[in-house]
Amino acid sequence: MSTLRYALLAALHAGPLTGYEIVQRMRRPIGYYWTAQQSQIYPELARMTADGLIDHDVAAGPGPHDRKIHRLTAAGRAELAQWLVQPPQRRPPKDELVLKTYALAAADREAMRALYRAEAQKHRRRLDDYLAQQAQAEAQGHDDPANPKFGAYATLRMGVAAERTMLDWCEWLVLRLER
Amino acid sequence: MSTLRYALLAALHAGPLTGYEIVQRMRRPIGYYWTAQQSQIYPELARMTADGLIDHDVAAGPGPHDRKIHRLTAAGRAELAQWLVQPPQRRPPKDELVLKTYALAAADREAMRALYRAEAQKHRRRLDDYLAQQAQAEAQGHDDPANPKFGAYATLRMGVAAERTMLDWCEWLVLRLER
DNA sequence: CTAATCATGTAAGGCGTTACATGATTTT
DNA sequence: AAAATCATGTAACGCCTTACATGATTAG
Image 1 (cartoon, each protein chain N blue to C red):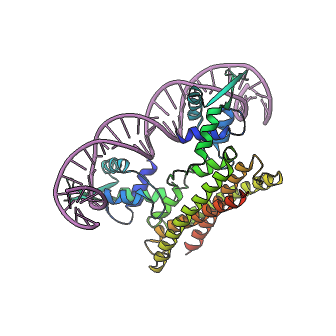
Image 2 (image 1 turned 90 degrees about the vertical axis):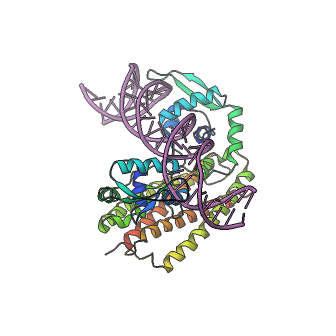
Image 3 (image 1 turned 135 degrees about the vertical axis):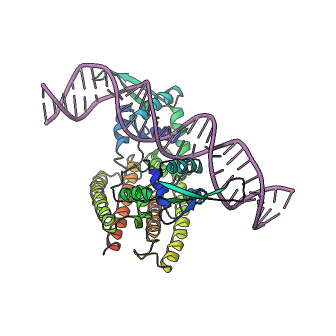
């Protein structure tokens, strides 16, 4: 069982979705959890159906393809529940900006400073975006653990925290590389 | 040019290393920058040598293989310097724990709470470890941008910040999932 | 009239992980 | 005597990205 499979089970945990809707959610991590391309998602959904983890209803779509509305089977839901409570396997963080930083002595200092200033800007934008979404989620009561959307809210909070961390780090570098 | 190539150029930016030494540094990200397996590293070093980005001296080793001490060529150093100042391409963060959190409603609440408590513990340990390394680096003056090890120090600071962020988030979840 | 959206899929190729292989020296 | 360290490599396989393909409806 690959992590992608669990990601798809997780995507379906709160209710049925079409492959297309899953693709939308996983393209840009709006909340902040996982990503995958459609060329990975469609075949995997087919395999999961063959393995009895999910099934689907078929409905006519606007284009040449019918819509397949996927939902978890009892087996799929059990598999998900069992996986959720197991400790995650740590996969190493790979961040290009951090890698560049390791070798920053090999580049022009002012150019590197400009890089961090530009990255800080990007993180500030994304942070503002996430903060707005977080406020909206709180207004709708998603911050209550009893609310079914609490999980999505918690991932959003991680997104906020991560963006803030990156922003602070970039700003620290901009200051440190002065002169 | 893959990111792995740039990671290897970055690894060699401060001086020559054998493939084995690079493997050690990239296995568990001591600072916090990049990882790769030896089965990726050795063939890539060979290809980079063929492409003129690095070259090496050969010396007798203790085992059946000679040591190859790799260093950047002028072309390799130029390629690295040019890459460093370009904006990094964002690759989506994939964190299994965050993924699990998204679907946390599908699992037993107390079991999830135990999971976050255990994860908090791991992050606390790693944070302490990184903090000790950071203090040592500062005592040796690596926090000065003029010091050639400043880049490694800056990546370590990112490691510290990231661990602290994850720790806080796990502890927040433990509190929120109470009762 | 052009472009985007909805909706599902296939093909090719590169990136990354796990496992296998060798063998002398040093540590337990 | 057994295990770890040093040191470099290959093989198999799966994951992931980029690109291609179809075609009706809706928005600009």
